[in-house]
Length: 288
Image 1: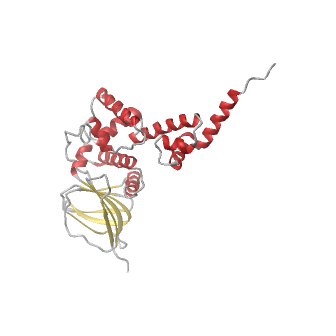
Image 2: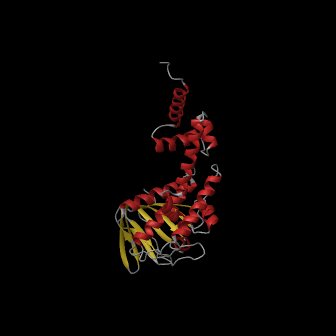
Image 3: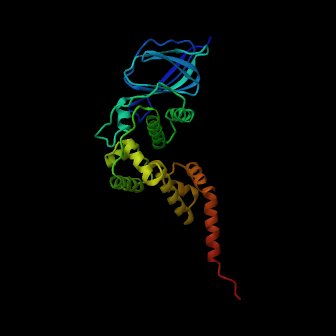
């Protein structure tokens, strides 16, 4: 007999988020409401949900989006039941994303429809859900992916759009301050909360402004700073291990992965190529 299974987790660093993974074959939820928004990705089967006076069906690959404090009840929408991954997100976090600054929360958003067919965003949210439960995942990088995915969700599937961002000059000054903060200590990987506090912006406001100004997330920018430092050290004759340690990478494999993805070659090859180049330059020209 196949049994229903539900697991809950509270990812570290996310005070406003609860994660649920469930595989349900026969369970019928009683009518209830959550204090949080429910953002779910249906990964198998079909869930039927009684919501706002009608029954909605969320098939495999769809998003199920429920506003906070709204009564609803879920049950199998097909004989095989359903599997889903759910983010339960506090209203304060979604208001933060719709706000311009941390001290002026935006309005509480409302999802336009409870079931949406958005396969690309569903896959993205499912991937982020898994990463948030992975202990060794890079915290800053996962936070960026999570908040950016939520921002896309709100932009595409809520009844109203977020307000405009801060003035460009003010944004550029804040971005410059964050860049200097990151460059000051390559061995420290701050959280979005740390960076947002540094410039008195909301986490999403910071992420949006930084990407607009640099084309990178703060984590991506920090990786580029570390790679630049590693390049300098390798070209000066340091070993790959020393370059990795001195430039803020956790180990050689961490440097190798980012170096190869960015430059198309491993750091050892870069060091050898630079050394060959230096040797050639050091060789006196032949006599005529």
